[in-house]
Amino acid sequence: MPQNRPVTPRTEPHETPSPQPALSPATWRGDLGGALGDLGTLLPFLVGFIVLAGVHPTSILLAFGLSLIVVGWRWRIPFPVQPMKAVGAAALASAAVAGQNLPAVLALAALITGVFWLIAAWSGLARWLARHVSRDVIHGVVLGLGIALIVAGLRRIEGDALLGEASVVLALVLLGRGGWLTMPTLMALGWAVGGWRQPELLQALASAPWAMHLPEPQWPAFNQSSVWLAAIGLAAAQIPLTFGNAILGIVAETRRLFPAVALDENRAARGTGLMNLMAGGLGAPPMCFGAGGMAAQVACGARTGRAPIFLGSVLLLAGLFASGQLTALLGLLPAGTLGAMLFVAGFSLTIGTAGSSRDKEARAVLLTTAAVSVWNAGVGVVVGVVLEAGLRARVMRI
Image (cartoon, rainbow, N blue to C red):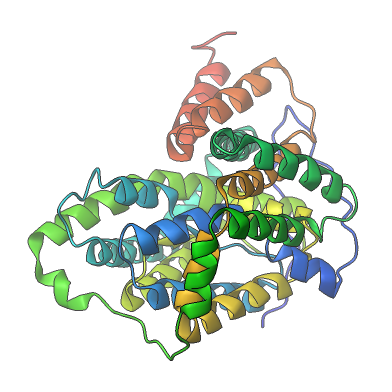
């Protein structure tokens, strides 16, 4: 394991660096509680990929489990692994892949994504692009992603208002008391309510057989031209969002929370590439890192790589021996619980962007980038860079 070297965050002439947050000391209970902090983002896509898209449970659980274990060991901090949201949303809606073999399309999209980000890392493209993006734009992306998570959480809560609102209030109370009990408490409450509402799922959970399972690679289907066309379309649609969230966002959040960790854009891109090559080989959908996931894990008490290693080990063992049980258990969580989890992740992400003073033009760049990033982080980066360049050149005025 190479020694972590201090990284000096980029600063702009019009702002002072954000003060580093004073994190509480690392504890086992904090890491175990924080390991569950990102489940609000992971669970909806995990259930959707398995139940709606037909992805083999063992394939996706092994891919996430192995990735979490590796990044936790490699970086020694709460490093999140998430589904690629644009790919997931398009695939689950079947907008871009209607009539296709969805598991094969998703696995091939992961392989294409992996190759692209490895090229971006080894060529230096990721770092070159990042040098031309200011901190105002990066903070705008992070703020926009946080707001998007809050909105997504509130939409889920709308259909389950009583449980959702009670869960959000409970989460905010627990976050102010160390945070490590937040996600375990929300999940316990959600499972209790879900079991009461849907006792048939409890019966399915009890009757699911225990057996050894192996992943289901999708290589035989890669010889179909229609699968390639659909996969390329999904992978291309995700690239801008991945650059904004999984490259710029995760590097900025790491530097804010863990400034001693030597993470840069090329390393984040290389990790994204290698992770997706493995996922595609196992027959799993594309995956990425996420700034919101790190903020949520830290808010819930995680401080070290034990958090992702713990969650990854659970997913790995479940994929090998209890994929049916885990699928039933995940399906038991109500919409209100999942919405509250997303709200916590978004809330934790947004409060990290207000630590530095800005003039009027810098605030305009930040807020415009954030507004567009609520829709798409990649487009938000482009809009923020163009707006900032226009203001500096005095082509635009506010």
